Image (cartoon, rainbow, N blue to C red):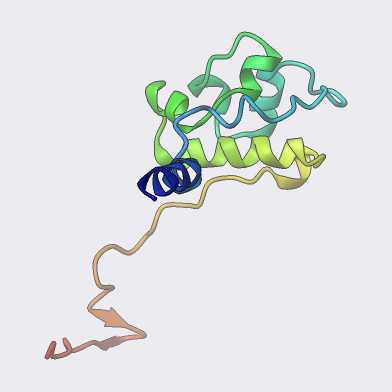
Length: 128
């Protein structure tokens, strides 16, 4: 009976545990399209100065990038997410001119907002 339970636990383990291998390496590498034939051209096409943040020698290495490798390269979370999202969009057949967009601008108002709005002083609310 215990041998049978152990066999079931071994079968469930890969599904319940997070994979530590690079899943991006298992996905197919899309062929270069249009004027995007090098990793530098792709990173320049998606914008946000990604070409200066990531150094990749070959087209195949670009498509094997994953989060831990980008983190080891010193990229911020927003940059990692944007580059991986862009790789997925290109893999689905979309053109970078269609999906690339600039970063969100910095907030102009910090904190809980201005003390004066529409010419009237805003009184603080009670926090219960």
